[in-house]
Amino acid sequence: SGLILVDSFSPYHGHYLSSAALEKYNATIINVYSPYVQSILMSQPNLTDDEISKIEAHGIPTGPSLTDWSTKCGVEITSIICESDSGLRFTELLASSLNLSPERSNDVGEWRRDKALMHDYLHGTVKMPKTRLCRNEEEAVSFAVQLGVDEFGGGESVVVKPKRGVASGDVYKCSTTAKIIESVSRIIGSSKFGEEGAVVEDVLVQEFVEGAEFAVDAVSRSGEVKICAVWRYTKREVPGGDFVYCKTELVGECFSDPEDDKLCPAVDDVDGVIVFETLCDFVEETLHNAGVEWGMSHTEIMVNLPTGRATRKADVDLTLIEINCRQHNTDFAPVTEACVGYNKLDVCLEAYLGDCAEDGNGGVHRQYDDTDMTWDMVPRRPRLFARGAIVHLQCNVEGVVKKVDLGCIPDLDSVVKVEVYNDFKKGCYVTRTKTMAEDAGWIHLVADDQVKMEKDYEKIMEQMDNIWEIEEGENID
Image (cartoon, rainbow, N blue to C red; front, top):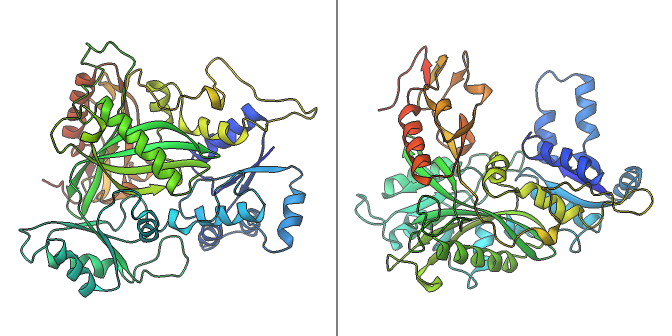
């Protein structure tokens, strides 16, 4: 069985998939680059002839030569998975050219990447923020005023962002008309995500939805959805960044004594069972309406409890922010393994390869161990054995790093792993974190006691401003 991996670079995403597919399914891995990623790699300065050849070797031919290419692979290509958001359109087009869709891949759907098209496509099927695509500052201000924004910041807020993008890049919360004008001017004319040489020509203006923000990780196989993890985001505003990630925390129904409030959340809390079940139902229906039939997805939703309680599903008010047809962009697998017992990447491989991993004699080659599950064994909804979270390391200084001091963080009871990215170590020039793409690293927390984990998180946040000592520059108050 042949598995195409598109834009596979991350050790905890694409490389994990490659190793697991080979080890567990005896799959033949075919690594390719999307045209956008290939062009970025080819634009690097001082490439050697050997490096150029290696980059070109990962390209995909078009037209009739595509058939020759797939034949030369020497294996029946049954699956295709893309790591990068920028490569998703190419992946859908390639799957269509190889006759994988719709039987084993999503068909081509621009609305699954373009936030404006997604809003139009799903309009009337699900609650979404009031949204308009605006071509200039005047149109953006006009729509924002209709939504209640005023000149002095005494009214409502809106979100101004590109219709294509990731990791909160160029996403601004605007409470005044002046900030709307400033944000629009930053976005329009900037480089367009995923399209070499293109510039942004319009912006999305959306009403700002208050509430708790959740992200639901799922895997689909021929329309059947398995919810693999439900996360709650904690974000904060910093100078230059309106939506900086602090914590991504697993939530949901727990394997525990309902009387044990240290682990099992109360059903009338936003982290409760009723909210969890309502979120899962909502995502299953929304993925179906969006035509997401195959692969990983990552759906972001705002949650409100108008009555202050969630004793029934009708008490939960949900607003869809967006669907991303890819993995959650962080090293989530170790946390879900510890807290749920499995991870989304393994479930994705089982969805694609579990029914077609054969040896040379036609027998199934799948190598199961005691912890592995077939697709049918994967629960429809996850349940928590422990509490877990990913803390996003934020660099709040600018200058050359003189010293990195994590202090007491590695010794905290809930901390199981810490990684500071290489670009934020001694001798590097660093800047302040303003988006998720500018995170300085991460910390994995796992605990059987919610209160203990929360106290450790608070200690980490207190320490955050003191991690980096720099040669020049100063900490933000």
